[in-house]
Length: 181
Image (tube, rainbow, N blue to C red; front, top):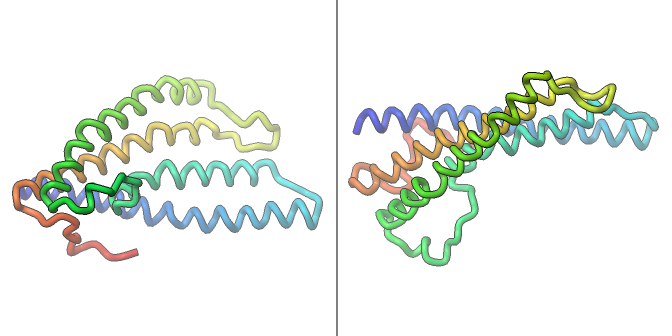
């Protein structure tokens, strides 16, 4: 069980650091949006690259923040029955959901996105706008990074559920090394 705990901690740590870094991009996105609005309405000027960069940041926040949201229990769930379940029953439901839905869906997204992303990289896809951002292929790479990070965090969550079912861990037991946001 020590190996499983070590794996869970390592994945949780990577997800936590990634989520915290990504969360700062929302502030950058807001600041850039203000700049775009000020440029457009007060100076009658604009920047396609700046507008596209907001879209890139938006995509990055959502695609790379999804594993962090899973780790923090922030995804939507039908809670009518679940909230009344015992910790072991909750762990069983989460384990079954992870194995039957989360892992297969993330693998499917990864596999189905591979050729699309590879084609974009092969031509170094750029913006259709002349003054836009050149790296659309980098944005499309998020279609592979998102399921990869979600898959890793899904494995950690499944590991936690297994430990709860074996009586080795309490449900929602905080990591002693974890600090609140």
